[in-house]
Length: 98
Image 1 (cartoon, rainbow, N blue to C red):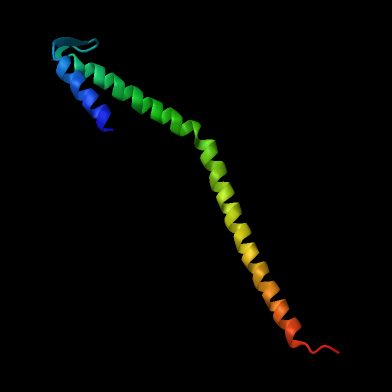
Image 2: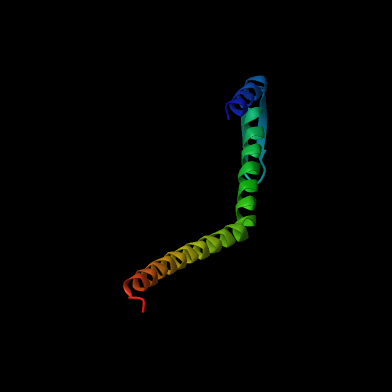
């Protein structure tokens, strides 16, 4: 993260020349440093990619939740069966052999 931060700062310091942004449907012209629209576009692209990745991984997360629930249920069943085996062993030891 530190390396990316340093690169962003170096880019901003190196590209301070002003450009005029013409916001088309509006009658505004906005002078900004060159790095501002470039970084804004990069940030929007990053956020858009993150959203696409999040939705693409939805099925994987759903399967993981289902597998986790199934594993928890199986662990509970295993504990119940262990308890049942312990009870049966205790009953077997208490019965006198003839």
